[in-house]
Image (tube, rainbow, N blue to C red; front, side, top):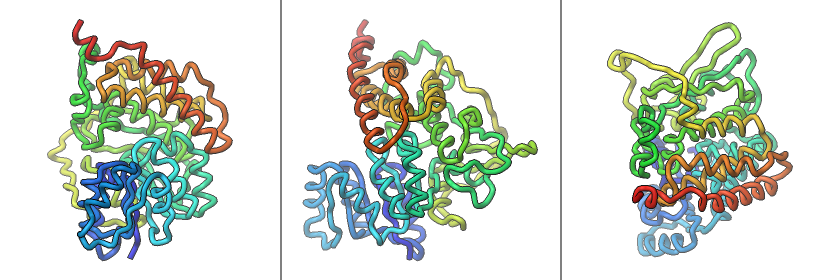
Length: 400
């Protein structure tokens, strides 16, 4: 029986992971669950799978969880804060850790899982974007296995030669093509994007995701972060990663080899496929997805992204080329800007403007330690929050 700790269990990745695990209780046992502050949902999950530990990063929410579990008969121990997340990421009972906590909040627990030699299922792309060299070094030092869960990176991994190692370029690879659905505004006129609401930005036409990643998909920043992640995961230069828009979300990415061959991974747009692949690798397990019907699909379209309409992708490409601390700076500024948009304090089109303002004020610098990353992250967030005062709030614009 393989013990699994699910970090970010109340989010879409976590829920999909638990769905897959529930189909294979003969192979896997959930030993720990971790989330941010959703005590109600975590309580339901605890009562369903009865893990050894449950963690909420927010202390008040953790107290609520204890109250909700009182009298339930569960022996699950409730832990609190980032220290609790690190503890379950490192616990000996968990051979596999799903790193599904969104944003920079998942960085330390992901590093802890790598340092302790786990099979790390990486759904938290920000850990690589912020501190890629540190995470790759931790994987090697701890003897961990790093497996991508993003559908695009899982596709690339599946198309690489067997035995490929995280952070090392596979022989014969010329480039990878990272597919993007284009998000909900692919065909929207530029002028219409000024009035975009959070609800519209979160209504992805193909994927069911959390609010932050949905907004990133709408700006194409998600694809920019994935480009940075691909460079670090697969030992590629930024110019070896090309983003192509593929609105059907059937081809999840492609790898082109020096002999002219191009390999692709296809499947229905369902996160349970890459989750199941990472859980069971190198074997395969059923996960409840709808099987792909190519006849019904009928056609597969590809086109280049419109960089003028989606400047966030351009900013991410520049950060990838700059390297060092610049991806961490980009990520921090983006997190602040996206949250401000979700809070209706920032116009959709002002998200990349805030990010650009921050990255032009700060220098890349080399990553010497985690402290360097966290210091750059903090400064970028401070500058981004200061920059929020420059663009007009959405409500005020709408009233003009």
